Amino acid sequence: MIFREYIQDLWRLERGSVRQNRNAFVKIALVYPNRYHTGMASLGFQTVYRLFNDHPEVRCERAFLYGAPFDREIKTMESEEPLSCFDLVGFSFSFELDLFGIIHILMRASIQLLAQNRMEKDPLVMAGGVITSLNPAPLLPFVDGLVVGEAEGTIPQICQVLHFMKRQKNRRIDKLQALSEIEGVFIPKINKTVNKQILTSLDSHPTYTPIVTQKSHFGNMFVVEVGRGCSRGCLFCAAKTAYHPYRFRSMESIVETVARYNPGAHRIGLEGAALSDYPNLELLCEMLVDIGYEISLASIRADRVTPHLVDVLERGKVRSFTIAPEAGSEDLRRSIGKGMDDDTLRNVVHLLKDISLDVLKLYFLIGLPDEKEDDVQSIVGLARELADLFFSKHRKRKIRLSVNAFIPKPFTEFQVCPMASEKMLTEKRKQIKRGLKREKNIILSPKSSRNEILQGVLSMGNDEVGLAMGESVVSNISWKQAVQNRGIDIDVLIHRKRALDTNLPWYFIQNAGL
Image (cartoon, one colour):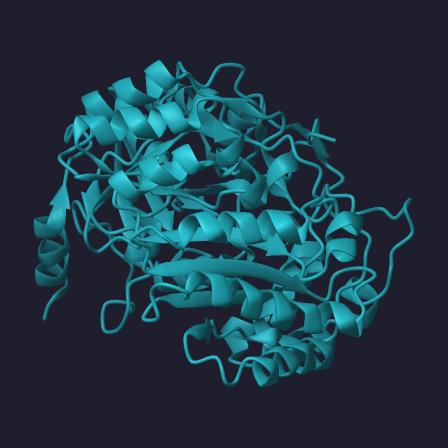
């Protein structure tokens, strides 16, 4: 199959569209450095794609990290042009491990990997997304600039600068200088700090997926954002700081967004880090169900689930429900700021056991600060207890247990805390697996402790870490070998507690929500 046939197969399954000006003067390639099904499930990626195309003098096209044999040269979906033909290549950077996708794509696009080596003919390379508001330091060697914070107010200004500078036939350095003067844009060779941008009103900027496709991770679901940030006090979580302060959209604006922009999807997904704290959640779900939609919700706090909400979920044909206890014991939950007792978890599963759910998803963390061996074993005990409740009337149901490593995140209270070693994480998972080996309907999601350590290195690392990752790809060596070659001590970087006054790599991001 040739690339065109592959792309046309994807096109045929897409519903909805984003208007494009085929004769626009400025050409932007928006790249999600992962597979198509992941990128098309990203609210941020789809929103930025739409916002760029809202400018009358900009044509923005999509590209992804395609699988073999289409990964040799990265082209856009819309025109099948190489990335090197565009004025700007913008990356949506949502997960630390996607740094490797960015490196691979730049190499295959015949764009100089290091920003310092790029010439006048090369496109500008920028990145935005949640990671650029946390720790983008490992990315800095590879980009000409960052968009830090919420981009809705920044993108129109970027479009204006690019259009004006291209008309004037300005040099590359002049374009970077002009971009550096936009609030929320960070140009490493020019700016010293950057102010993270935050929207004051979400209602004036609807966030949704204008294109739905069964090839998306979410399937044929229209996803709309309900709110941003989180008002809770979990000490490990970056969501509350990355998009601080907590804000939510009016119910009227959400319903209007669904009515105006849904391209025909029958299922509506409601998304937000603190979805359960939305003040009109039950009423919003009820309104959507009464219209005739099925609904899907992100993770819900157990202490916010009511009998009425469960009834609405049943009518909305919700087939899976997600709860994140985070820790197996009440004491450890209190110490990490989760503040949820076992009775609350039992009560919510008791409410769920009578409705037509197929899957209950439970999320836990291991390697948390102050975690004891009994805390790990308590995950087994709690999972078994909740399973007995959930399976009491429907023995064919499943519980999917996701056990993830604690990874210190920038701008959280736990950013200076050490991360457990790969060996320790592996042993903790084995302990949980042994404890649940007789539970056939409890499915433990596979995780790689090695990849979690890598994620920790990227979460805490500086530009030297980024250069090491680049060398690992270029030289085809392991990332651990590349890190060692550059003299980076992983033990010091992530396995030892840092002093509170440590000069952290993300120092240049101001107004970060703390």
